[in-house]
Length: 409
Image (cartoon, rainbow, N blue to C red; front, top):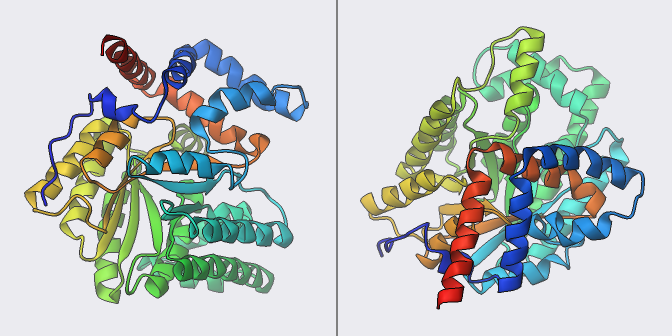
């Protein structure tokens, strides 16, 4: 079965799940997010207002939270998932709590929360994935130390990781052992429940131990089918080579590489840190380089689908279309179990719903949690829509086109 023609300009399919009222609310919100000054003010004042316990939750709940989040509890996500399911769109559940610097009890609790998400997802017809942050399971400083030690070693990722572990103190080794046990608990539950577990990417200065941990988990759990996925950020100039090395490792060790390809989320922070500390920036010199590597990564994964399960996590129309064209060229069906597409809930519906209509496996990334915990995520969405060139204008234009089409039909 070949992929039927797709147009990302088809607003009828893109917004079929939204009422006129919901579309108009989205138009107002994106209109406000098109104002950089307003967004700058809002992203500073909102977290402060929440901390100061000012009565702003109702306003947030009815606007930006409603647009980009699935609810405050797991059960509240059911309504959104059900609506999306009617249009063959799946859900990736993300418990939207940022990592802290708590103790073992807090990290054990985070693992328990991830397991609750898996248990819940397993009862739902269209929630095949959930998302995990390793920073929710351990101290940032411990990851940072391990990463620094790994950078002093030579050899493969796993060799560097094992050598670095030897240089931790006995206390730190025990602490890291507990991290591995937490990760193992969550992976075992995901495998048992047949839920895909997507491990988020982190900052470059803590990413190496995360990559090593995830690769070892894949080696254990991804033998017969894909359970664990790592995230590769192509705004880093070294990630295309890293992806090639991962594919080689999967072939050599005979496991299926699960990989979510993204452009990335920490660019400004990464550049500033490199400048402050006087080391070469890990970030691509320009957007064209990120785009080139991302698209090369997509093609490489699709060419190796027998050993790679790929999730194309992108709001870039060209990259999504490129993946579809690659499937056509290789005569791979759009619903092949090793190829998935994903966009954030509340954004790029023109991509999501048109891919789903064409028979592709598509999901929406759906964060949930108490409003005060999801605020950092929501503030990033507001900033992203302002800073990504043309994003807000594109969303607004599509919404206006659909409202016009509905008036005329």
